[in-house]
Amino acid sequence: MKPIILILSIIWSTVFCNQNTNEMIQNKTIYQFQAEDIDGKTFDFENLRGKKIMIVNTASKCGFTPQYTELQKLYESYKDKGFVIVGFPANNFLWQEPGTNQEIATFCQKNYGVSFPMMAKVSVKGSKKHPVYEFLTEKSKNGYADSKVKWNFQKYLIDKDGFLSKVIPPATKPFDKEIIEWIERD
Image (cartoon, rainbow, N blue to C red; front, side, top):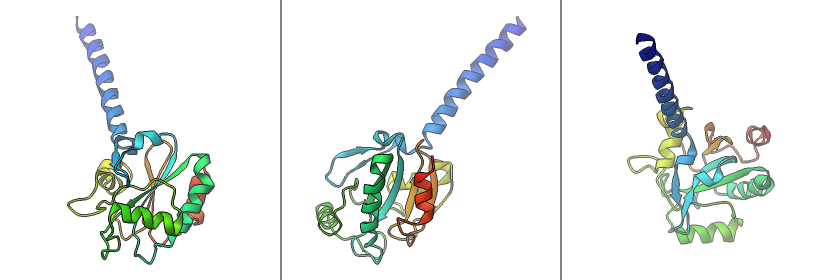
């Protein structure tokens, strides 16, 4: 009788632990999130499964705003190779993104030809931080590292499996060697 109980306990704990491990892994990927896009539609990160993702907080009136040009070129260069950029406008730094979603969309299209996915304006820090940014900045949620969004145009790189793999400072330009090597690496 004891060997049967022991065998059943081993089987039970293996199944239970594997199920919890799978849930824990899924909870540390970007795929668990949805966001409202700049047009008010639901954007599901699950639809990006298998792609490398750069998430960047943006602003229209920042010294780094010209990075939109390079971000668009980077997106165009690699979008057919499994890479996508997702922009999150935010007004957290010196009120440099004061516009409405419609004004932001018009600004991005008119001035920079932005065609990569843009989300609705969010908060990337503080008590109203968007859940995607909670994930990106808290090691307990992303399994990689704690970080703070230091300024507009900070970049978060998500690998093909949905895991956070790098945090790139705002001043680092989109065509920086570190970013290109990361995109091109399998």
